[in-house]
Image 1 (cartoon, rainbow, N blue to C red):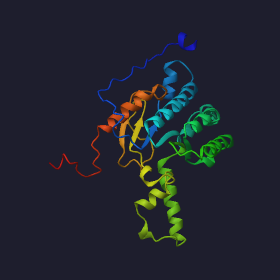
Image 2 (spheres, one colour):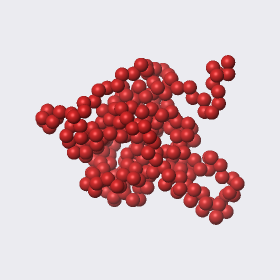
Image 3 (cartoon, one colour):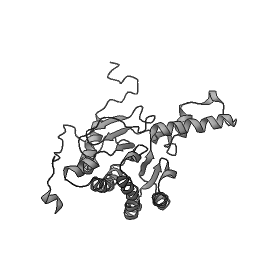
Length: 266
């Protein structure tokens, strides 16, 4: 009823793409998404911002299932940053309740889908009820060995790197390693993605919704060679077709990792 009397101020028009997704082509093993645009989605409908966050959680459910169907092995979602505490208190309170409602309703489906839940971030600073919901979801899906649904919750990449450096410094101080033994693998294993196998720690594809084209303190170390894809679609409007378009873009990239492709060498 609300949507009928209060039509969208800025109606979303799906983007056209010349890219064609190839289900038999390369599928990125690790996809990370900066889920942006929930507030604008709600404001366009003259709804409170929290309505956008609630709808965004429904999108998380749909995209998780679709990513699993496509064979993606890790899906990392930027759910709440260390900077998001600056938002209005009522909005933050709502966001801290969302994981409780989300996991309580979605975990049975995740178990059926063989999806394993992981969370990275400074969980100890979350409200107790949020921490409890996270722990339950992790424990209940631990036996699953399919897609890893990894939430970045109270996460900030610069803080993550600082924490990793501090941990390494303590190990050097305690004679657990020598300073000259520190290398890229040492740092990578101390980051919050260190629980993943080495070949899955770094996302091959990073997607940001809502038209913004910046990284926003997300996986700064891990995305050194990630392919970036930006879409104007607001997160609540993002669907399987959008995900396929992003992957189609990935499939058409020439990933050289600083070297030359066979075509370049001709």
